[in-house]
Image (cartoon, rainbow, N blue to C red):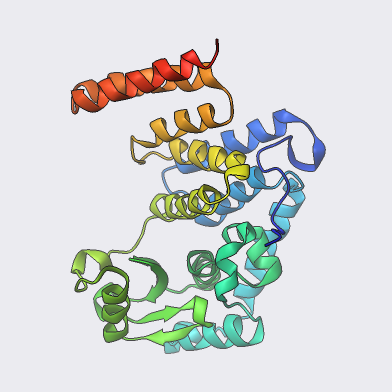
Amino acid sequence: MTEEGPPDAGAEGAGGLGPDEVTDWRREFAEEARAERPDLARLCLLVGAVADPTVTRHALDEAEIELDRLAGLVPYATRITGDWATELAALLGVHEGFEGVPADYQRLESSLLHEVLRRRRGLPILLSVVWMEVARRAGAPVYGLGLPGHFVVGFGDPADLNLADPFAGGRTMTGADAELLVASATGEALDRSMLRPAEPGAIVLRILNNIRAWAASRPERSDVALWAVELSLLLPSHPARLRYERAELFVQRGEFLKGAVEMEAYAEVMDAVDPESATTIRRRAQAARALLN
């Protein structure tokens, strides 16, 4: 299958301006991620800027303007009626054509917000980000819900389960629908802990996890896997094991010394919690160093 995703992601900077531009995007991502109230749309757009070397600051501004434009099309009376799910489904799902198809799972662009706004296609979580950002700008009490295997949006009190599925064009979901979705994804019953609104950092981490999963089945795109891991590590909360994953990617890409150093540093962290694993990691670091000879 021919991929139509961005060119070598994480290569030279946006618009061919050189490596300093990439450094700026990552610095801006780290600053936004650690802000008191991180801006979800900006974080997602900065992921796209790191991913796609053709992206310029003007392109990111245009994406923000498009979100503002869409929010301006939401009927003002919705603030009174509260029928946000219906109005957004009519606007975004029907009139603007935002929805998903199975083939979107095979495209890197489906995880990049600026591309989702352009193509009107994306993964459930990115389409949900569009819904959330448009709804928030229009004054809706909206939140994202990261159910196992599928991301949806909710309105009002999370206990009311007033949900919509942006991937399906905004199809309304009942509590029974949510239970069925969880059961099909996990084989288990819906747990109330799954109904907590997702914070921006958790949403972005899930997006980056999707990108890593996309790259994992494409060894030739280890560059994508690497920048996705590195952005994940810039988030205030992330799995510690991502440090080891980054080390493995360095080795995979032929940067044996850098990978070995990363593995040894991670082994020191593991000493306190899992000495046996730490020993195994040190052996792998030694094997990576041996590849230098």
